[in-house]
Length: 371
Image 1 (spheres, rainbow, N blue to C red):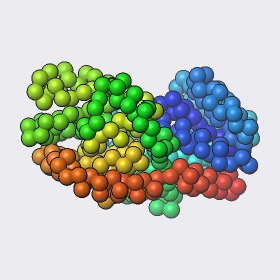
Image 2 (image 1 turned 90 degrees about the vertical axis):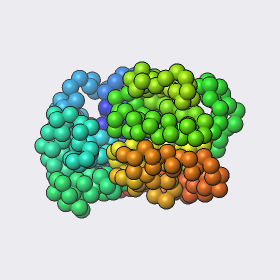
Image 3 (image 1 turned 60 degrees about the vertical axis):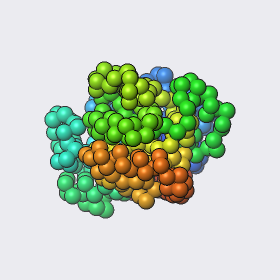
Image 4 (image 1 turned 30 degrees about the vertical axis):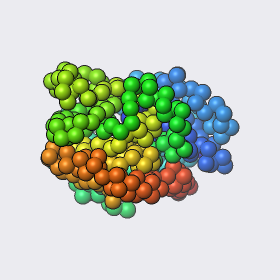
């Protein structure tokens, strides 16, 4: 079978980029009987699969994304005589119709409590185009059950049309810890063991709930001096943006900026607690990363955060800084509870497997390619 992979998100940072890079690699490696045509939007990504005899790389200049998806991809579909086209994001080439598949990475545009995190233009686009993409696609994958349910409930998509397929963190998170490497990473970021760790970003501070994190940390620090480590693109500006002092509790907050995937496992494993009370996530990759590393988690009792964390985390109301602070205090003060959550985390992490994700994705692609 000849399968095309639309990889314009290959270079993206964040969850969709992690998913795109990993699912592409795993599909190619897991199915030598199929030939994959990889369509990149950037020349810098060419060569990523030069070691794979069953992969042909194509550079398709990106430019306008809609033209790339709806004009260029159908042309390459015919030119390469594809049986199926797979987009790891949430669009499909409409002219490829039943031979195409896409992935839903969330439904926040449609949920009243969370739609404010997206612009009106983005919400209108999603409201108009998502039902069309779902109707035209041969297969629709969802990264979480909550996402599948919201699409079916709010857009009227038949339940049989969407399949939930969990993915997993990068393979580096499942590897055995390397104490020497971990020490070098901590030294690079000037960290010591036992801190509270969180991930956010300059343009996502509201959705990631950083204001509540900051309020909770002030309460925690007043009772038990400790350190908060904040990582993410653009977070270096948070000290000025949120008026965080250089002294007192503010002196114990460190902003690392963007952290590469290769360094993240060491930061998780060196933390006493991973704090992630986000307001909205469909498939929160940081939760799966923390589970794989066995780090005790405090997260929100809502949406994909609750779905993925299950009983391997302390769940809190993200709008209540007091409840967040109390949960973190419990973990910092109770080694038995931390040990219990570490054990539960490793067990829970077994649910999120690239082998399973690849197998289930491939089955759907084989089905639409042979129908």
